[in-house]
Image 1: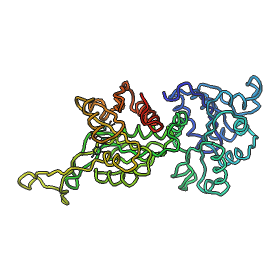
Image 2 (image 1 turned 180 degrees about the vertical axis):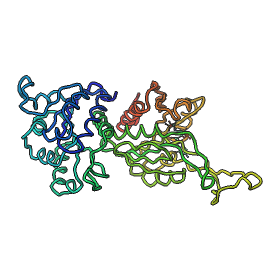
Image 3 (image 1 turned 90 degrees about the vertical axis):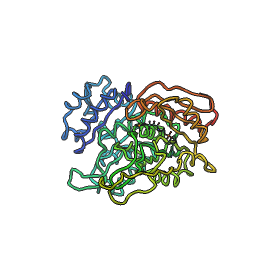
Image 4 (image 1 turned 90 degrees about the horizontal axis):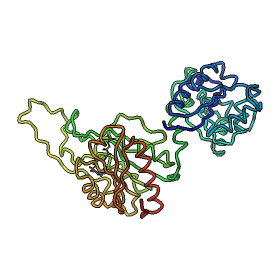
Length: 400
Ligand code: PMT
């Protein structure tokens, strides 16, 4: 329950994407948020207030002159009771009014009268989105510290395709969760690796391992939530990219090495979560190796470059963080790797805890010794790791 105790006022403006706001309310409530919905009159033509009332468990406001509100000021009450005002969908008309401070209905009045942060999820036809007026409005709202969520590109209700679709409800919830996280890495650049590597033997076979990418993707999400600009170089994994993270897909260790080294010198932090193959076949067969080929082929292996050690050896390296997965002697082996790679911090985990699942147990090793992080979901551990990274960026010798 990532939004436990958070009070969200959801403003629904008129547009076909209003139907997605119903699912959004369901997801927000599932994450523990208390949701109050305010609708524009136009929005009621797409979804009824009853739907939102049933999903949120709270009365829905449409009319700013709502007699049911004790002081007759629904706009003030809805804003004072909220930790965030989220407008989804936000129509072009709503955005234009918000820019000018027009307050001619409940949503716009609420927006003007608020004393909490405002996030908007625009939804409109691609030409309306690309219109210079909307571009100007978005620039002004950004300058006014309004969070702009999306929009996404794709098929639109009008039959056209392009930028202007409202983000999916799951994506908006992820953005909202990120909104509430502290931002100690604001303005920082974080480069990461995640997942396994795949070392080809022939066109259909290869050497790989059981890394799912979940730990690395959780760290990428946590770093982005903390305000960093995150680039994630990942081996073959079937996971959705965390919102706002730049993803570079690679296959083998050589490719991962090349992509990382191209970017490493300009980063503040490098975190190697990937389970990089130490070896690759010396020769990759161009043709599929046939069973009939006798005798059975011997695969000669050569060593892959150590990406983390190379980044740490740069003249001006970013703050380097490693991971170590061991089946035994975790403390001894993890600390040995930390020293060998000359990095300030390594996160150790047992193979049986770390690989594949959604939870993990991490022990952080640094110059002060070890810090055990209790078993927890990978995202929770990732946030703790990122908090430690942020501290070390400010003071490389900070105690636990
Ligand atoms: O993906 P999941 O299923 O969620 O699992 C997560 C994980 C168990 C893979 C992850 O938590 C983890 O422990 N990753 C490191 C695995 C490991 O043991 O790596 P290593 O001991 O081979 O390497 C140590 C460090 O050097 C790692 O940071 C690794 O990314 C880096 N390395 C290793 C070899 C190499 N050629 N280049 C590297 O950069």
